[in-house]
Length: 283
Image (cartoon, rainbow, N blue to C red; front, side, top):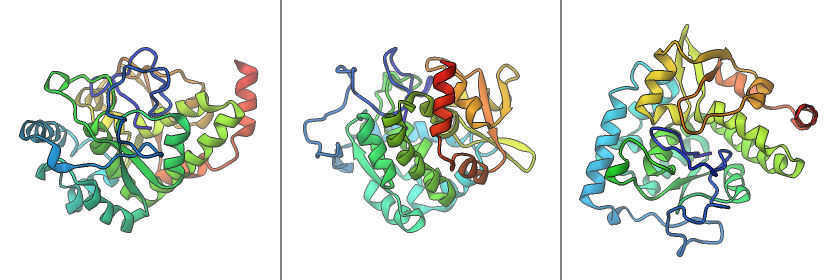
């Protein structure tokens, strides 16, 4: 949910990790004065300065040096095989990327000024629109940023949207989150997102790789998640992930490993209403 991630982007203490929200966070940055009713804003690539373009390229080069042996095949195929995702050319133009993305999975990117309310974010996902923050971190935030920015959103999330089964899951998640909010289950469903879309790992030909955006966009998390013996690595399980509190200001203490993206799709397909009832009784 384009959440903030430590090292690459760490949220303030009152940040709701479930989604891009500015509710309760009046000081969060982003220009909301020109947004449409759905919180979208036009991206103007010409507005990015030469300094911002150079910073973008440095961010990209740092991560590109780390991902070849650590990112999942789907992420690498998108990064390396699609001209629209050649991020070494500069800050991507969402309109150009959308031509390829629409053809691949019927998703589109929409520019947003920053963090979004629950219903707005989930409605975008349910309609196969992925919100991407239009502003880029400052130089002083190169290694640590309070909110998700353009680099986290685009580098971490967008390449995986070109994988059909993953893209279908994300739409279903948006639909499920709208339902979960009505049922009082959003906090638990947010943990599922955190441990999959943001910090998920997957087994690939016997090796564990990263597919979560919070891992792929953070040099510290990428190496730690895959090469440190400190965190737990456990098989993915829906209820286990929803029962596990998240760490929003440090590297994770546990990572859940998928065997395939089909497993993610299948395991999250059933109605979660019974899950929420069980979790309510346990809380």
